[in-house]
Length: 484
Image (cartoon, rainbow, N blue to C red; front, side, top):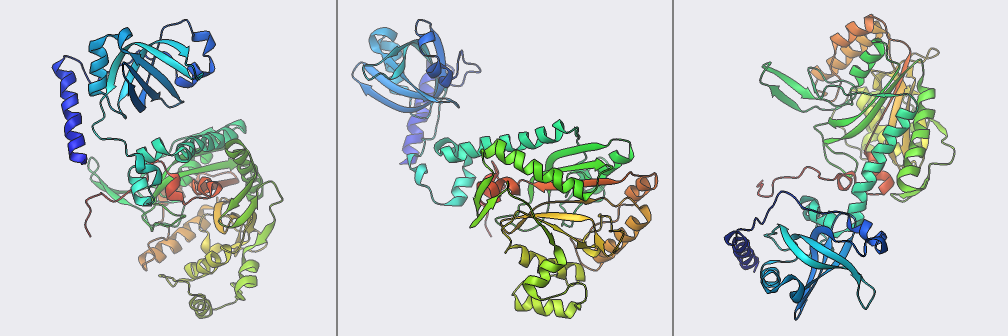
């Protein structure tokens, strides 16, 4: 029984304390990583060294104890001999150390008769006493909630999960490296905002006690703040940061996640989609060593040409609805026919519902352009057709995988669009954007022609071909004792 195991381990813990031994010391004399020792074994043969790690296997053979200790880099075998470390320390180890404990072993290296690289102990030290046994059956756990809740065990036991954590870091470092090499300055912008901007999303609300005001967790990585930096004279900025959206969970959506946004003065949306396409290729190659992926049943090759697709034409091709001439009622009828749910019945959301249906059938990678102005409150209109904006979306494996646009820098136009969005909010559309009049004032000082982009960790999850929740290291979970 687990209770008996815990009771026994607590007794062993107390044994150390009774002997004046700290079972949780602050420091180890560890000299090298295990992988370094294994790679440089011959050079270290005659040296006394200290290694440390978690015990992953343990067996006694008379006056010998064989064990494997594991650090982040590798496992290595260690050997305790009673005639070398003495009866007292041998018995202390034998009677009080368990698999899962962290220990430090000091001694010299040698090769066993089976040529296994081994550290022969002259001394040992407890570093951390584990009170719960490692669940060897965790290898076979199928309950995804249990895997995510105890992610530390998932990482410990499953190399695939451990590799995912490392790949995630490589992914974002590559994103950062790509931008910095091209002259973009990394910045940090506020997470708490008086008004949210930069996306259509329902925000989280909290209270700022010191100022006695309600504030919002940001829904974009500083779009309106980075544009202020363009007004201030900077020409290339980017931010990689956490954003928060109080919306539903799916295989593609989470409430808090990492996003990259960048802004580039004197460029337009065509410059930006070429830049971002090259960024994706660079990051994929750095992280995965390939540009070819199998994602949700689609064969995706980031190295091939990315064709331009017209937003309205694609909807017409797939649904036979012309979004420029169809009535709201005709669009609603088509949505009902396609069994697409919609909560808000304004035209922006109805058209967006059609598009979300259509994009699921596009393997990509493609670049979608010519989006309606009414669905893009922050994008600049095209000169030839004011009802269309200079905006792009990347679609990969049926999902939006980043977007950008020529930023609206006309303060009068921006104010009118904000006010239309505010009216939609007041009519019940909680995802419509808030009017930010301080940003309008900043625009009135003049912002140069600017393009921007934004993409999230959804790209990483898709390249891994996993749900986005599984690609976070520690996704948010309900408390274990939560009751409906």
